Length: 167
Image (tube, rainbow, N blue to C red; front, side, top):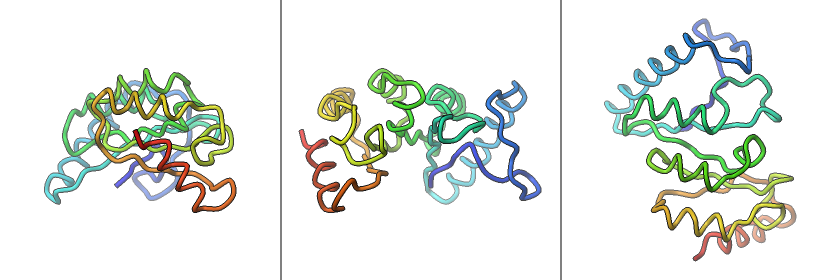
C-alpha cells in the first residue's frame, strides 16, 4: 500500500498543506509511521511512502525525495519502504540517479513517467536506458511500475516502458 504526505487528519478533515515542516511534525510523522509498521507487521504487508513534487502538489509536507528518505531511514523497518517516483524526483530535484542511489537500501518500488508530460519513457527529457542501467547496477531488483499517461496508444506506451527497462 502506498502512502502520501497528503490526506486526512485526526478528525477526518483534510490536513492543512504547508511546505515547511516543523521539528515536532517530523517526530509525529516518524511515530505515526512506526505505528503503521506495527500494523503492517501483524498483517504481513509492506507500505511504501511516495515522494511528490511541489509544483503539482503545492504545500505537501514531506514531499521531496530527501524528506521521504529521511523519514523512511529514521523508521528503518522492513514494513516501510520508499516508492521512489522518478517523475516527481526529476521535477522537484533532478539528478534522479544520485537520488536513487541514496534511496536504494529502502526502495520498495520505483515508479516512472517521462518529463515533461508524464507520459511513457522516451517521450520527454529523461535518459531511461541510463536510468535503467543505473538501477540494475546498484542492485535494484524490485518492482518498477509506470504511472503515466499514454501519449498515443496504450499498447505503444507499454512497449516503450518494456523497452526502456529491458537490459
